[in-house]
Length: 134
Image (cartoon, rainbow, N blue to C red):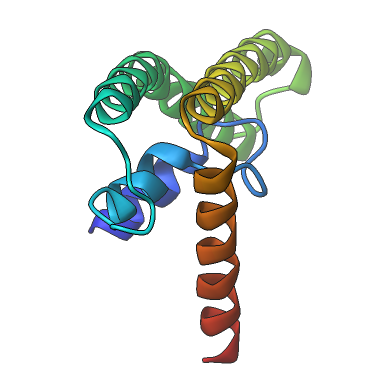
C-alpha cells in the first residue's frame, strides 16, 4: 500500500525520475551515526519536510482529479480542443509541484554539510547498485 501511494505521489511532479526525494531518504537515515545529523539540522530538516509536504498535499488532489478527468474524457470521444484548458492547468500544477520539489532539494542541501551530502549520495548509490543486482 505504501509503495502504491508513493507512485501516485510521483505523478504529481513534472519530472518523475532523477530528482532526489531528500525528506524520504533522510527519514531512512535519520539516526545513522555516520550521517551524524545535529539536533539543529534535524529541526531545520523537519521544517523543510513539513512545508514541502503541505504544499504537495495541497496540489496533489487537483492533479489527480484533472488527470482522471482528461483520461476519461479522451476515452469517451471528447475532442482534444475541449481538453486543452485542463491539460494546460494540469501542466501548470505539475510545474508548481516540481518547483516545490526543487526548493526542497536546495533547502535540504543548504542544511547539510558537504561530508553529509557525500555520505548520502554514496549510500544511495550503493543501494541502487544492490537493487539492480537482484
